[in-house]
Length: 503
Image 1 (cartoon, one colour):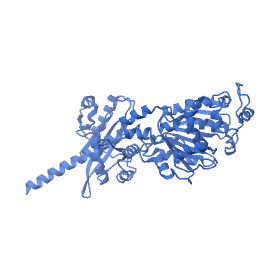
Image 2 (image 1 turned 180 degrees about the horizontal axis):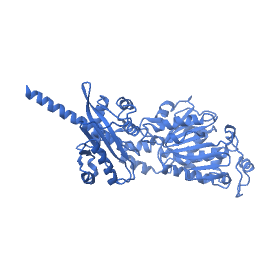
Image 3 (image 1 turned 90 degrees about the vertical axis):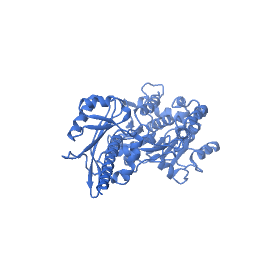
Image 4 (image 1 turned 180 degrees about the vertical axis):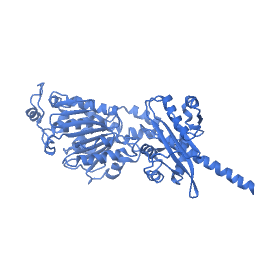
């Protein structure tokens, strides 16, 4: 290969145990494709080159390298564009099916940008540039990090690593590679030379209704001072909302757009996945398989309740309401065994506001796992007694233990007659008609707005949190709001009966 001698000349002998860092430059000494094909650089990760053909085309397009006719056909199939931009792209969104190879490609790009580019002109006195890889969770992050550690550990580049922790690698050229989970607060204060976002369609946060847009929004200012900073977002698709969907809707198939959208099925990007596996998944759940392996956004999943509706019934800067003597209060509990889900409690009352009976949310409690269920019941029972509550309604799927534990404290635990799906369904008209006042609670807001309505093959709707997310706070609040509103209807019915009998 013609580029090999240039790499050896800048990096020193690849056999040396104290190899010097390559003298990277704004135009790297070799292309990313050459690095992938070279057995002494990243070639070992791309041995079966036929299975990586579509990825090679993507990399050529991303980094402004030429295409032959066969590669151009793949480009057109995956982008619905006629031709790539000659200079490549600084921002791209990959909508690719599961097991398509996204994590390895993100690691490859991070390794290449960190080892073969010179970012020093954009860093000042002691400042380090950051290549940030953001994953859904620690497990996904560790997969990318494992690939990355291996790539930077080859003899040619091993001398670059100065310090390594479980989620960062400091290189000798003032570049730090960080693995982060999806949290926009961890991004601020850095100079980001490249941001690689993995599975952003599944970034869920109880403290935010839209963590994907907040994280991407926090990244852009961190990249503003670095000409040539690269942003790559990759995910298998899910519902028609969020950054991934918005990018696709705005830029897919647009030749003049500077944001590249690459949409491809699992087998397009990774032909080693058996078609029989895809067929089996499709038979089990066609809609899910079309999204997970066909890279098609789901049309059977939609938002259940709008953020505007929740905002309209939220009392700003009201975090809790104290007990009022003579007022009757209601409570709903979402129990948990203490190992994974939170245990939550919500308290509310009815109040006449103008001519309307309104449900007023008074208190929310959440204890996150791990915890002792007995200790949490003790804490919740104390709060219930402050509000004069002797009976609490709760989830029917928790078994007998909540009844037994609350009974110890003189609280009657009553199993809800409604399922969670029914409770959420009944909550919607209460919120939309503004018949309740909620507390200013970030996790409640995030969980309510994230709720999804899914339509099953039989046409039946279900309402639940997205995959990987939680709704423990939302469940308790929805339960107590619906329960309290039902008490209002009972009171109104009795009053009508009394009035009728009086006549």
